[in-house]
Length: 343
Image 1 (cartoon, rainbow, N blue to C red):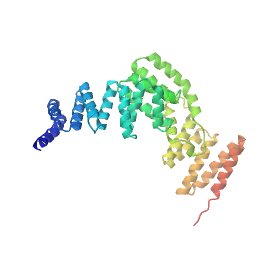
Image 2 (cartoon, one colour):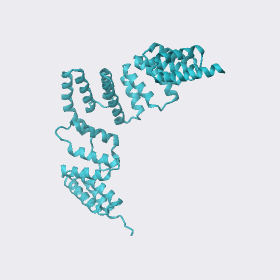
Image 3 (cartoon, rainbow, N blue to C red):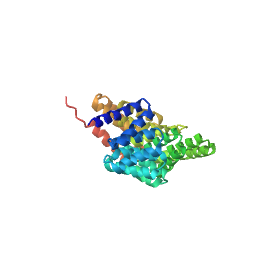
Image 4 (cartoon, one colour):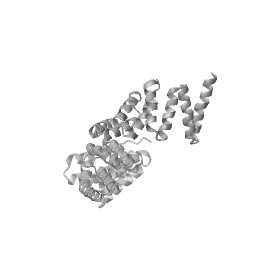
């Protein structure tokens, strides 16, 4: 009994030594406890973490593996060994440890992240793509945002080759993605390969307009465009040096503001789109929808402005011989004016 109390105090004292950066003394106390057989799962874990901190990597791996082999409380050791294996470049072992953790905790994103990067580092980009795409439920834009974030972290850590490998997965998900090419060009510039950087930037200049046009489609309904897709396309504004896409980018900004609940700012964005190109009907329709929404909240006077914008859109559709669209505008106006007011 007294021996257990003594070991308990030594165990806690080792924590204090680590906190005070007295690592030699902490190691001495933990070695003593290991020899005493005191709470092996916790003692080996604490010593393994200290060994990892002191770059005694083989010793750390030995302690974590001991827990996994001999103790019931294995999961903390799997986590520590997964991180250690990743650091050592043992990527297949990293995947194996991540799988063990995911069996018990399938929703922990950090374990999924280690598995994804390990797939890349083992030269399996297709598996990495399939895995991460499933993690994000096949949401292309959320997946791409994650990939670009991981690329930036790799570059910040001066792991340029890893950053390029991560971008390979982006290419598999969305070929000729401008942000992917831009990130790749930046990595080559940091690496000092100016020729490759210039080559990619030249490619970017030709890819961006085609990419933007193919991904942007006008629509009259807010719900037809995903928030992540809208935000993603707005990021591409950095490539529009000639301001060639001012009108669609204004439309997208209005969508984004609306979906974020900033209705007044949404209205202003669509008003700007009308000013940029008064011959396009989409901005009038979206502005009319926004004004109609605002009139129902706190400003009935906007109802008249909404009808005016529907009529402007209707005239443009009519001049373009778009009968279905013209009729739709008539229905919108009829619906707008059929709203009963109870006073």
